[in-house]
Image 1: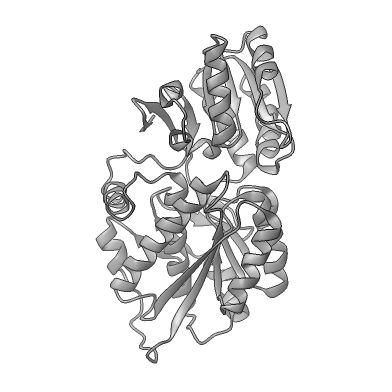
Image 2: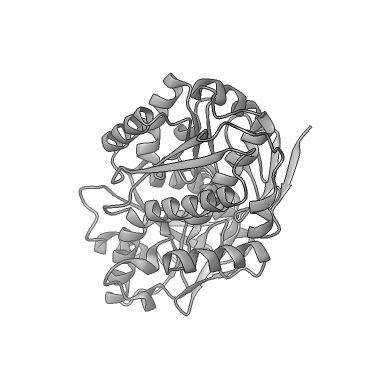
Length: 379
């Protein structure tokens, strides 16, 4: 029977406990985290680290998970697969029992290959590549790349935002190319004409004049950007320089655009992105989370922060549903959570009535936001 956890507010979420089992003093659950807190994707990792710690602090203040406190240890991987595996091994030496991570797809795929061999439970907040949760020990909070691609095309088509579309994507990145592939397939079903599909690679991601010119020449009313925010800031800047002003539409990788150093955020006005979280949403849970995050870290949280926050509470729900204890091995905990993750339902920041399938995918409704007056506004 599924256990329902309704988080009406942060206070409620932090105090809802399903067990008061007493543990010996000093016994704790050890949750590791991995992501980029330095380098080009640092906005993502910092948000995940901060929000996860916020959730852990709330849970500990309310008595812990089933009466046991939680230790959280986050390691920097600089968005690099080899460094991510090194971080994973560091956390194993720390006796990690569960992993929230990794944050970005390519490192997550590398770590997932290690975690399945160790039978370590892995819940990635934002690793969207299909391969991130290919094994039965792995789950995710965010949508997969295929889901983002399909949902983006559907949103554009169903809301009649544009009919002629160009795509600029990173063919060297599994996140970007995966979204593009599914977007292109669904675009045909939505009556969208892709007038230009222009790739770049990790070795050529500073000059986008050729890609933008082809989009402009093709009459694209909308440019779809299934890419990360750093490259997107350059594209917006260069588009303005050539007097090209289409609608720009992206996915969760664009979350962080407003924080790019030296970027003129006025150029992002009207940019749309598919995301399950809007910081200006009026529900009590979101408002309380945003207020707590701003108080703790001095900034407005992005979607990655919301994914991580929901991830920690999903782990809490799964642990309590399974009845595991801190003295169990990581492998035994993993075996239990493989089942209990498919039995929980939570109302979180990124979705109401979220559930998970045995193949690691979340069930929740997609949303979109639009940058208005320098802020993300729900659509």
